[in-house]
Image (cartoon, rainbow, N blue to C red; front, top):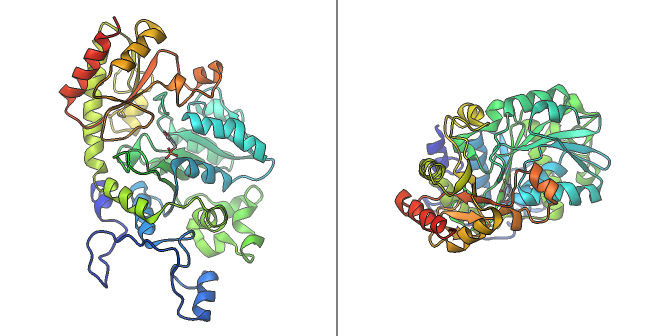
Length: 424
Ligand code: PLP
């Protein structure tokens, strides 16, 4: 099925008992066992079924199957937020003393997690100088467990060369983990270019309405964990925390997600609620239509800004002179994302005046909402970074980040125009 159809139908068969067409919300913590033997079989993973919602829930499972199908993966795990997806996604391949290598252009909180939190837990993150495969490769050693990137960086708007990064990762026997939140599987499916694990903040375009936090981790099923047992013993040797289960034997191609669910989700419990899964499913149904309108509106806004005399620069990969234009052609099907940044003439004071004058475009920190949103990364999402770190993440003091919504283009442009007028 095509992505538009997957987004509406995948992962759910009409409920056989009630014939409910909409996915039912199974707002339950536990599930009754038929007998002691049935309970034991479930806990031994010998029988199919549910035990406890921290381990699995039928509503959430529909969302998991749908997101996995959208990304072309074998299985997904949904979690409480995008940040949990990033955290579990990395924890699942690392151990004390190991490292991952990351591009520098990251969402601010991911940067904080990598620069300050993971090292305290014994996992080092090596930040490359740039998103170029050569810069990444230089930092890989025998303790490296993954390469990490955002397919389209927030807010830098850089587009990573997923195919080349995957080749680099595989040459060194490690997986490529890609946060695909900004691009969405409608514009880009990283697994088709060799990515092994794909992460999402479902909070953004997939949910699409700014109502619900959620995250997803998608397993491509392609990384040969068994071939790399020396680096990744956790997947193909017995796990004492789960009565000596060997994940590659039990879960086959979905060993990565099987372990993530059995170890991190079960024991640390950052669970997505079934009601949230239901709300996110409503958003997923229309994601293809919305992304089409988001990207069309973004082009209109980018062109308006580029021609405006008070605008210093516009970072939009849809313009042929943008350094990432060729990669946008290759990976985003000639489109560019609706997340863009621009700088106003007059630096920080002008940026503040513009920001305060917005009336329709909302001042907040989110992206991928149906509403158009504006944020000033240097003072909000990337505030915890040093000036140097902000610079390498692509954040400058005068920068305004826009997430263009699906309102009528004329209304968005009129608001930006009047706010630019207020900077004089
Ligand atoms: N990844 C990216 C690229 C993001 O932009 C965000 C949030 O803005 C996250 C992850 C974290 O998502 P959440 O807010 O759902 O935890």
